[in-house]
Length: 120
Image (tube, rainbow, N blue to C red; front, side, top):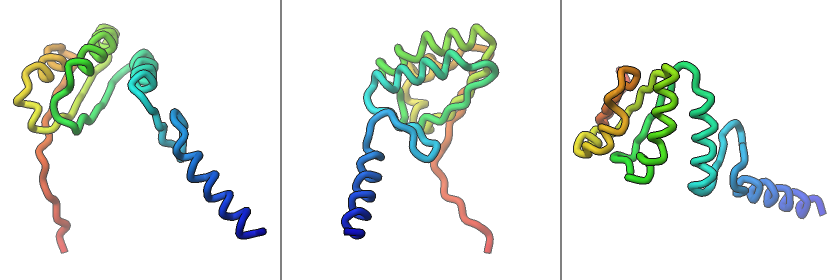
């Protein structure tokens, strides 16, 4: 009986982690584009001073750029400073570059993959 209860508790814990739009250990899990867009809108509307972002996936899709443009523009008009780190390969996609650059409050940086070794 004790083993059965322990197994049930483990299963409940496992499936609880699969629930969409939940927070687990301080990390928020959003499932679906609507949930993600809604959360990004709420976060963007609350920006007061700066927005720091790391976008590791390379060039942004047209849909992503179109969805972020009004949020970025409103934040920039409020004087929010925006800094974004992209993969180096995004330099080959002018559309992604022009969607985030061009404002005095917008800074775009590029990161190259590199390996680091600690001194021993």
